[in-house]
Image (cartoon, rainbow, N blue to C red):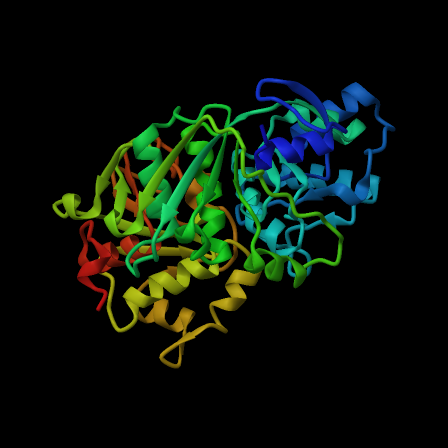
Amino acid sequence: MGLTITEKILARHAGRDRVEPGEILWVDVDVLMTHDVCGPGTIGVFKRQFGERARVWDKDRVVITPDHYIFTADPHARRNLDVLRAFALEQGIPHFYDAGPNRYKGVCHVALAEEGFTRPGEVLFGTDSHTCTAGAFGGFATGIGNTDAALILGIGKLWVKVPETMRFVFEGPLPPYLMAKDLILQVIGDIGVDGASYRAMEFAGEGVYALPIEERMTLCNMVIEAGGKNGVIAPDKATLDYISRRTEKPFEVVTGDADSRYHSERAYQLSDLEPVVARPHSPDNRALARECRDVRLDRAYIGSCTGGKVEDFRAAARILNGRTVTVGTYVVPATTAVARALDQERIDGKTLRQILEAAGAQIAEGASCAACLGGPADTFGRLNGAEVCISTTNRNFPGRMGSRQSAVYLASPLTVAASAVAGRITDPREFLA
């Protein structure tokens, strides 16, 4: 019996020829990422366990990317940045992307890809549950806690239980009204928020490879919303082209065997799918967008690691070009590179920024996680009352974007943009020619 992509990567990083689901292995780590929320805690555990003068196992494999609470006057958030700065200076860590005009990158999951850290066949851990985003590049990537991250800082290894793999195949060409967000919300609605608990979610099929790289990142980003351990997509030419433009570090592409054994397999015909939303207060509370047309909105939000990439803003601009929003619409680029792209990418001779601003959207001055995790009271786009919001973010639990009294609907950038124009939840097909 052959091995899946996930099994094969873990086997190689454990020095094994093969592994079985359920086995616990010591695996070598290629990249460890942390940020301003969990970084200080990780550093504290590392120093307590390894000593105040301990050095990290490999400074070139540590990436520190503050992103969550950057543009705030909150003293606790500012203190977290001070802890990261002191540690990066002490350890001589070259990949510390400090807040500021020269080094700052933005949301860690998108920045990791932009900076060439998401390589096929590698093992990447991060102190954030959406680290699974990086599996879109054919590696094993997952979120861990501060204690595990501190152990990696010290020895460069971690215990990992080999997950079973669930396979999801999307067949047929991609309709112009569907995005990766629709696909993953369809899956989560089918299997539930615990349907993939500690399992790998592997995506395949013509529909998946029709998606741009940034859209594949969205697919893998939200496997954690189904309880998944990691998401993964086998690399193709588009993957390798993306990576080769961003890093010269060698890597080895890993693909699953033809006779791999899967926990389960689900197949979808894209022509049968429609734009969907996740209703409050769970990502698996799925409904068709057209079924929610009576839901009136107070605001719309386009941003986050799931919905703040260039491809997301291209999609939103398709709807907003020449139209005006009727509810408060907040736009947050995921990274500084995405923010620059808003002034470079054009539709009908107009930049994405011009289209969004002409439509009445408010664009954040800086790239960050912003309201996706609520944040301090001065966080851009934060929900402050019993508002009904449609958002491209990945979670809609009570209080996730600020106020516990709010109601958040999750949807694709196409659906969010259409809904922002209509003032109610709207199927984007109403605006697409």
